[in-house]
Image 1 (spheres, one colour):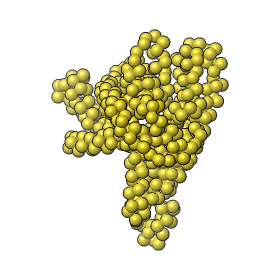
Image 2 (spheres, chains in turn red, orange):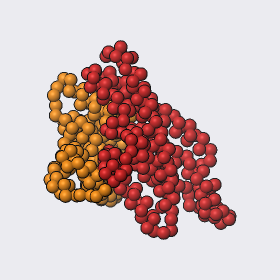
Image 3 (cartoon, chains in turn yellow, cyan):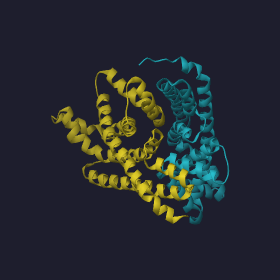
Image 4 (cartoon, rainbow over the protein chains, first blue to last red):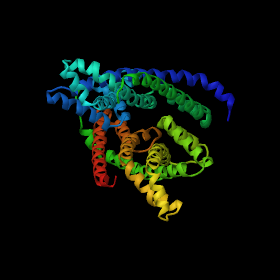
Length: 218
Length: 217
């Protein structure tokens, strides 16, 4: 182990780690809205809208994220859809994780006992009001756990953005391995940074989960 | 923006070849990750801490870092000592990655099965090893099928990442064809459809397997 090298390159890796965090946070933020939109579309009475949402989720989950990224970044310009690499990473990341997240959200809403919604409706709550003030608070705890798992997936998926030449953590690590020929040192350091990020995410989820548990009856 | 799918038809054999390589890799990785994962799980549940803790450390390490980083490490790291073809590095990298994920599942199901089953089997005269392999492991395997299927579906999709280290699978084949024809959109759409079809078959297979083993649970 060459510790001098590790000290020397750590600023480079930490700078790249911020790009990883930036892409992950923005993907999650926009992905959450995509997911809510998909859940909303699936509650329509008009069937074709529901089919559209189901089809979208099925296609996104049935094809590799990597191929989606390549398709939008390299294939996009030929249909007049040009994005810079980081925006493309966030865009594809959000629309990809949104599909997974909508399933997680839908699952946690469905796990709330249907008696709760029926009781609320019979007490005179409207459909939207029942969802917001009765069902969602009870689904929140479960939702936080299942969305939290996806947050970790997003962090790990962000490594694939290196393929479209975004200098994030994995790309920086690969470049440094290429220039220094010290794979073990660089892998150790990069893995350490990923582990710190993943544990930070897990800590945030746990805190949010404990808060949400106050409202649950599950 | 006009689409021209004729180059895709011209290069379709190349794509099919890539798909074949990808599926072959997936098959080897599936075998390696299930058998390896099972062994790792059995050892880390039943053997003493000196052996099981390093194994758990590796499971943890593979689960918290991205696949691509692991592949780069193996590719450039192993390249320092021995020259091995990219496809082997890909199989090893993907294999270890999913071995960790599968082991994690098997550890949970083995723990869920043992207890009463273990004691009953020992009292009927089975030895320690025989109990593990004849009583515990088969039941744990059947209980793992749903999650194991999910993992294998994810794994087949992740074979696309192997193109980054130069394994000649589907994405790599299409990148080659694109470098000749300059038709990225058409090619990537077609390979996305190909992955989707494979995925549908895998989901059907998983559902079938779950139905077939449902009565044993």
